[in-house]
Image 1 (cartoon, rainbow, N blue to C red):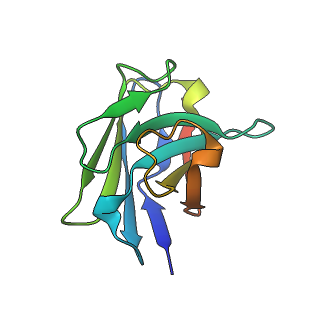
Image 2: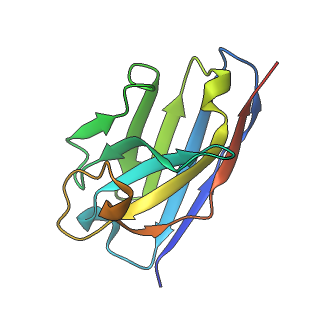
Length: 125
């Protein structure tokens, strides 16, 4: 079955950096676009970034553009999110998601077929 396992979250000071990873199994990773979402306490899950199946197209939420970078390694079946210049507003649980088949860009929750369990990111001094 599809499994997505995130890691790399933690506590970081404002202005710091973190790199999230998501290891995929149980499906043809290179055939699916992928994405990152996040959910803060009391808020809905929101789009962060998405990347096409070949890695040639990326899309970011306006709140993270220029600070976060999404990438993927199809050979290693892994998705990454490099997060720089972190702010307290970035505090949330971050989820890796598998886009539905033949969905090129995935900025909406309904574009996704499976999610990982999430990894906590806390930005605080």
